[in-house]
Each structure stands twice: as structure tokens, then as C-alpha cells.
Length: 176
Image (cartoon, rainbow, N blue to C red; front, side):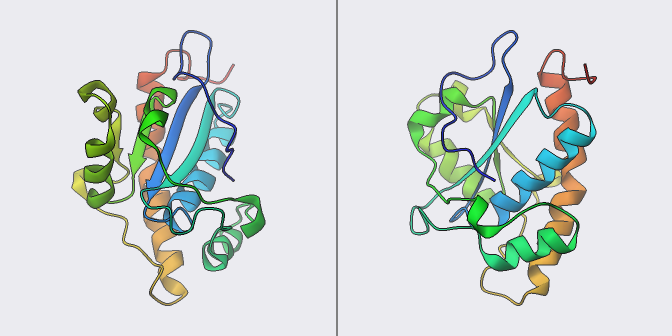
């Protein structure tokens, strides 16, 4: 799921648009959002034009695979996701320049990311996934069905995010 080799500045002319989802530990919500957006981009013919990544605000799960309950929820919904395909990592302040959009899964993540941003311009890249200042609740401490509920909220929010990407990225409005 996550490509830890993503580096360099955010999208310039002819460069892919770069999006990073951020949750707490990068093992549940953000890898699920990453998988959903990648699938929607592929369906829209935009997969080669947008790089999707994920990270956590904390490093306590750094190096771990995705939570098996998250990948099970993704697999049950038809997404190609395996725990070993993802390696959790912590979002770092110096990463801001490489992303065009940093998508927080809840308001706490958004606040933490804006505080971490090295400038107001970088902080302006942070947005919540769900409209209306709504969080995607953390399913980690709950039952397995909480992961399916979390996935449903992500799937519901991704079309608006895809529209945002199309508006912000010249040439991303249509598939080549």
C-alpha cells in the first residue's frame, strides 16, 4: 500500500499530484483510505497521475504492517490489500513539500499536522477527509465490524476528495 520511496517536491507541471492520508498509527484508517483512493483513481484512469501514500501522526506502529482487520475489511469489499503490503510510518515535518494534499482522518490529526507544518503555506495543504468537519472514527479498539463501518465512511468521502484532486491538479479532470 504505502510507497516509502516517495520523495521530492510536490507536483509541478507534468508531475504526478501527491496525496498523503494521515491517521494515528498508520495501520487502520490511513491505509484503508489509501487503498480506496487508489482504486477510484484507477477506475477513473488517473492512477498514473496521482501518487497516494499514508502515514501516522505517531510512530508507535512504525515498521508494522497494516492491521489485519483493516485489510480483511478491504478484502471483503473487493480491494486488493494485504497486511504485508504496507509498512507503517510517522509523518515528518520535512515531508510537507513533497505532498500537494495531506488528508487527515480526524480533527485531532488535522490539528497535529497543522502544528507540525513548517509554514502557513504547508499547513494549508491539510484537510479532513470528510466534509463538514467530520471525523472517521478510529476502529482500532473496537470490534471487527468497526473496520467495515470505517471503510464505508471512507468510501463515502472519497468521491469529494477525487473532485478536489481534479480541481487542483491541471490535467487530472479527465483520463488521458
